[in-house]
Amino acid sequence: MGSSSSSYGPKAIYLDVDGKVQKVSSVPVKMNTAIMLVDSEGALVSIDPTMPTNSAKAFRINELKTEVTNRLAMLEKRVELEGLKVVEIEKCKNDLKKLRDEMTSRGGARVNCSCKYNFSDDGKKVTPRRDVPNYPKYTLSQETVEALKKPTFDVWHWEHNEMLSCLEYMYHDLGLVKEFNMNPITLKRWLLAIQENYRNNPFHNFRHCFCVSQMMYGMIHLCNLQEKLTLTDIGILMTAAVCHDLDHPGYNNTYQINARTELAVRYNDISPLENHHCAVAFQILSLPECNIFANVDPEAFKQIRQAIITLILATDMARHGEILDSFKQKVDNFDFTNEEHVTCLKMVLIKCCDISNEVRPTEVAEPWVDCLLEEYFMQSDREKSEGLPVAPFMDRDKVTKPTAQIGFIKFVLIPMFETVMKLFPQIEEIMVQPLRDSRDHYEELKQIDDAMTEKKKTENMSLGGKKNKSN
Image 1 (spheres, rainbow, N blue to C red):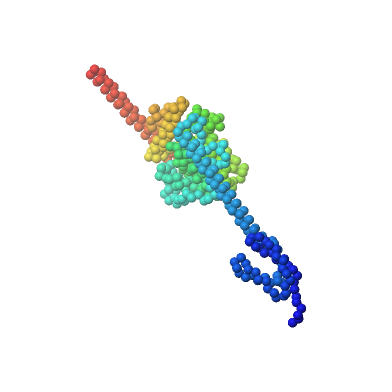
Image 2 (cartoon, rainbow, N blue to C red):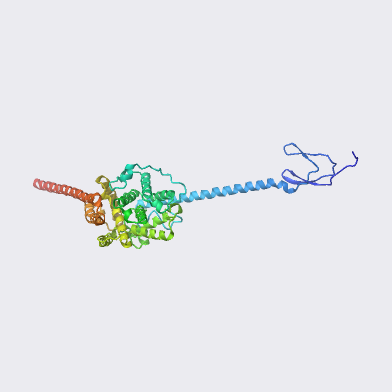
């Protein structure tokens, strides 16, 4: 072995000492000489002198990790705070809704008869539903499926979730899901949004919506409308029926106009409620997760939208005479290829379904009369307290169940259904005859009421005469 020595020149070594990077200059060392270092935990670290010099940057990884950790913590805090803001905003919205409903129920000033849906609100009325709706999927029995097609269907035996499943079934059964290429989950979300936007009024509530839709479904089958109308027309009829009373406040157009409510002002006293129902319907459909017509061509959707609006506006009873007269002029020479004729027919059909309770069996129909009178009395009581005109048929001091029904059945329902019967004779037995029976039923009740009233009057006169004699 030679006696000469090999050595390496001075190098700079950087060490992390107590978190600070320090530079250490090495002295020349001979080959095979080991430099021993001890780490922070006391373990020996061997560094071979042939190793390349390191850099001060090598010790900044820990600093970078610390910085990244701190930034991540800040971002998580921001996300948490933003999430809390959203929760608070939703809470405020719910509190405002409760306050608005409470003010309405207490019968505040006239201008406070606003509807649940306010067009000046930021954002949408309906909370987006991106999850799969969780209402139970009921398997309808064959008996229920057949009963759904008939006016005799008992609408009182069903909970909201069951009614939703029935409506969902109708859209599938009629071929509307396939025709409009509907996403089945979107159909569920739309139906839930519809239900949430009907108020808990005595009469104009979600069960009434279901009644009208079920009657429309029944008439489609009874009158074989699928053979005479397009599937688009069938979809328009069903969707208009489902949406026709959305967000009804429980006070009719006469009250809205006389009280000069926000709705009456907004729609210039022209069918304020029906215009509002349309607006809410299309606000719901404007939500992507609730748009059952999302896959329909834009031009076709414009026509569907206009047709639905036309039908919902036709449910304003102030237009009853005008619409029925127009249909009477067409019915004797009705042409299913004539668009004007078909539009008029659809208007009459939704009108029939809207006021069809008396077509149903007495045990199903009569509770609806009680519900309607309760809603009427709520309105007339409010009108009295506000010094507004009161319609006699809504005044609890003047109306009875028989008097409320006889005129309506005789002069509104029977003439309209008998006119439709000219085009569809098959409805006489299952729809028109029950109306005649209902008219007879209430006329008998009125005779009994009149007899009781006369008896009391005679007894009072008799008692008055006895008192005079004794004096």
